[in-house]
Image (cartoon, rainbow, N blue to C red; front, side, top):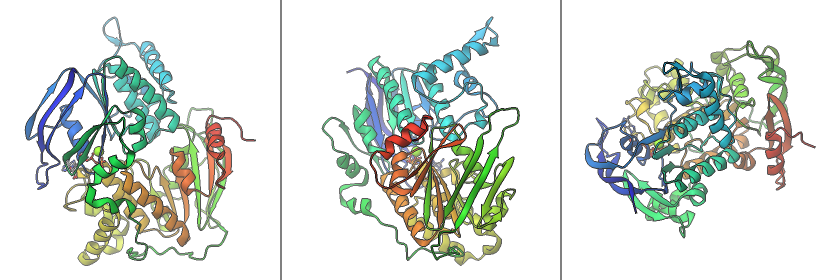
Length: 504
Ligand SMILES: Nc1ncnc2c1ncn2[C@@H]1O[C@H](COP(=O)(O)OP(=O)(O)OP(=O)(O)O)[C@@H](O)[C@H]1O
Ligand SMILES: [Mg+2]
C-alpha cells in the first residue's frame, strides 16, 4: 500500500486553551482510498484538516505528504466580488498570451466541472449573489479544478441536495479510482457507508479508531464517536419545561388557524435581470404549523429567507404578520414584531465572529439586560446546557467555536427568545447526529407550543420528518405544494417538482 499522507502523533492546543484540540493523533491515508472522518461537534476534525493542509501549525508531531493537498473548507473562502468561474480558476487561471485571464476558457472549464457533478451554479454570476448551497458548489469545483493528489472536503454535503451529493460522490469515486486520495468529513453516517473505504473516528481530540467501512454498522460508528459509556446521549430529549424563557413566551398560545405570517403575490426582482427572483409567491403559515420549503440552489429558497428576514424587500406584493403589513419593515423592526431567525449563513448573518460568545448569546436582549450579570449568567448557562454547546470560556471570540457549536449557539439563542414565529434555514447544517436529533425534537416542541414555523432546507428527509406542508420552489415560483400526509410517494413527487416538473 502506497501512503498518501503519514500522520504521526499530532498534538495541537489553541492558545489560551487547556484542552488539546488534537491529542496524539496518528494514522495513514492510503493512495486511492476514500477515508471518511466522523466525530461529534468539537471533536477536532477541522483542526486536524487545517494542520494537514498547512493552514495551522501543530505543536508537535510529524506529517509526511506524498502529493499536493486541496481542501474544501467548512466555512467558505471565496471572493464575493468575483464570478463563480473566476473563483474556480483563481490562482491557477488559464491565460491568453500568458498574461490576461482567458474568460471564455475559464467559463468552459468551470461549466464542464459543474455538469459532471450535476451542480446548478451559473459561471458568470458573482459569488456574493449566490446562495450558500451554491457557494459550496463553487468551493468544490475550485478543488476539483486544481487536480490535487489529495483532496480534503470538510462537510461538503451538508447543504447539497441528495442528487447533488450523489453526483459529487460519483466524482470522488472516479478520482479515487484514478489514484487520488480523498478525505471526507461528514456527520451523515449513511454517507460513510455509501462512499467510504475506511472511517476514522475522532473523540475529544483523540483518534477513537480507524476501521474498514465494509462490515461496520452505523451504530458502531456512532458508539465510537460518543464512547461506549455514553450511549444514552443519543437518546437525549429536549427538556421543554426547564427552558429559560426570559421574554420568550409565545404570545398567541392558543393554536388557532389564523395565519401568523403570509406572503401575498410577492415579486422580488434583481436589477438588470428579466426573470424575477420570486415570481408571484403566495403562502401562509398558521400558529402551530410547520411550513417547509424545498428546492435546488438558485431557485428562490435563499430569496424567501432574505425577504422573511428583512434583508431585501419585494417590488410588489405584501408580507403580512397577523394581518399587519410588514413588507417594508427593517430587520430590527421585524425582530420587534416577533420574528426569530436562524439564517443559513451562520458566519456573516447569524453571528459576529469577532464578538465574544457571551455577546453573541445575549444580543437579542441587549436593550434591557445591560449589565445584569446574574441574568446574563443564567441565560448563557441555560443555552449551553440545553444545547450542549462546547464553549469552555464564553468571554472568548465566537470564531473559536467549532462549526457545529456555533450553529448550536444560534439555535439556542433564537429558539430561546421565540415570541411568535421562527424561520429556520438549514437548521441542522453542521450538527452532529445527536445535535440534529435534538433540534428536530425542539422544532416539533415549538410547533406544539403554538409557534408558526417556516423551515427552509435542502434536506428532504428533514422536511418530511418535520413539516406539515411542503412547498417546492423552482425558478422563483412555487412549483409544488404538498400536504405531508405520510404518503411514501411524496418524496419522489417533491423530487420531480424540484426539477421543474409541474405537479399533477
Ligand atoms: N481558532 C480557535 N481558537 C481556539 N479554539 C478553537 C479554535 N478553533 C477551534 N477551537 C476549539 O478546538 C476544538 C476542536 O474544534 P474543531 O473545529 O476542530 O472541531 P470539529 O470536529 O471540526 O467540530 P464541528 O463538527 O463542529 O465542525 C473545539 O473545542 C473548538 O472550540
Ligand atoms: Mg469542523
